[in-house]
Length: 114
Image 1: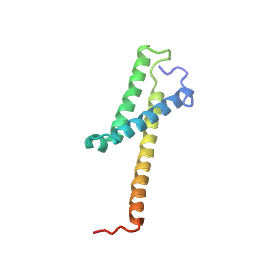
Image 2 (image 1 turned 120 degrees about the vertical axis):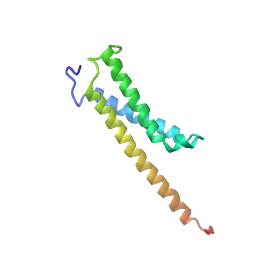
Image 3 (image 1 turned 180 degrees about the vertical axis):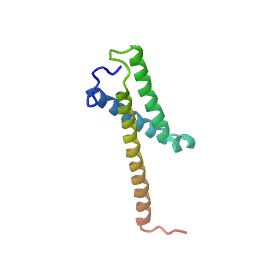
Image 4 (image 1 turned 30 degrees about the horizontal axis):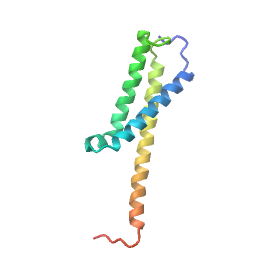
């Protein structure tokens, strides 16, 4: 486990990008469903699925299913950082979009609030 496993290895970037991407895509899809429970929890669902995929990959590495040196705590940290960056990006995006919609409504001429 972790023989010659550098923090700045190409493998860590792959873990970061994959977990970031899974979190974004699953959150986006869950937020577009007709079920309100999934929409309200879309970011959490994306995080759970992404971290589950990362943990499964590390478990499979440790069992020898892939050509690797085994499971790596550093890979898991890269997974977690990818998810955290995705959560920050999603929250910024959601706050930007909700603010943008309210500004558009307020500036639309010809509409009066009743």
